[in-house]
Length: 119
Image (cartoon, rainbow, N blue to C red):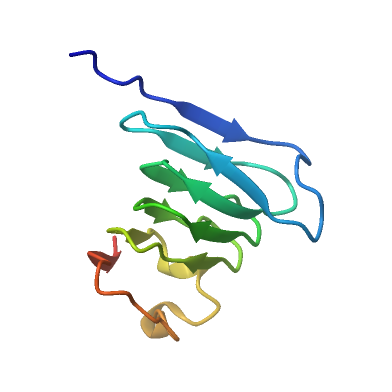
């Protein structure tokens, strides 16, 4: 049996149409990574990416399938899928609150979310 390929896909520059949502589907591979590095943030629906790394700006990421998401800097909005999702918070200093007060708020979690963890 063939092992599906690993895909690493980077979105950079101003590739997004402001005010519109872009759908990114990395297919059926394993260990697929989507890196978002554009200058103005992104408004995305993402499918079949096991790892998503947000930009340094305000991103809106809607998950169509289970993923692990690291939002990056900026004020990010991440919507969980019906699959098993992981949200990673890597720096408390990126929160609008002080480091001692950094929290995740207004989270509505489907039963399938596995974890929300500060690292």
